[in-house]
Image 1 (cartoon, rainbow over the protein chains, first blue to last red):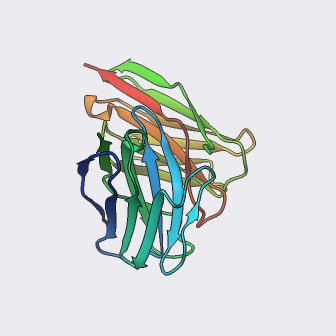
Image 2: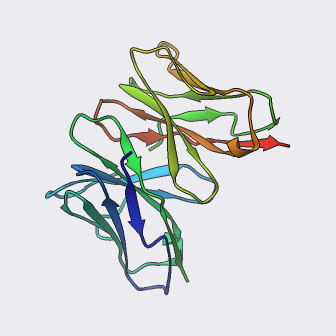
Image 3: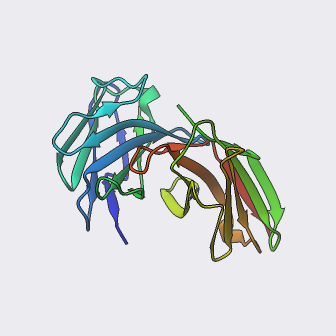
Length: 116
Length: 111
């Protein structure tokens, strides 16, 4: 089946630094990728939708200058948390959809971000 | 924003019993999906049911969809310890739309 990877799986950083998280579709080309965040014991909240070669569409309340998304190729999307603060600590999960019209998304294993 | 509301929020049952979780949503949908998440891990896709379907089975899983009531249920039969996890429903308004997750049900199977 389709596999999506994320790197790193865990990252700890100091407040004020920027952190980049990669999401890759390993055996298929993803026209659309999605980024979610999840707080402990809570559900997944959609942050943004990114389409290859175009600007990401952010959900209401998500700061686009804070969470930079780049979908540079059909197999890679990156999320950069800029000037991270402790409240940005969360579990970040990406998903990928193979092509327009597909109703199945494949989820990555998630990245645990801890900001000290 | 979240679309679905699962109930119960938490459920503890004895191993071997059946577990039923429900999901209600607000808008019209194209499909509804159920996912499982073990603590601190990624999501596992369980089953997708389309708006023109009423019931689907996959192994020990049975999903129903009632579009008139805007609700779905997930039944796990003969539960096992390994079924302990959080279960989320997620809906898409259109076929290739973003999916929005419900709040989830934390299921705990007691030995």
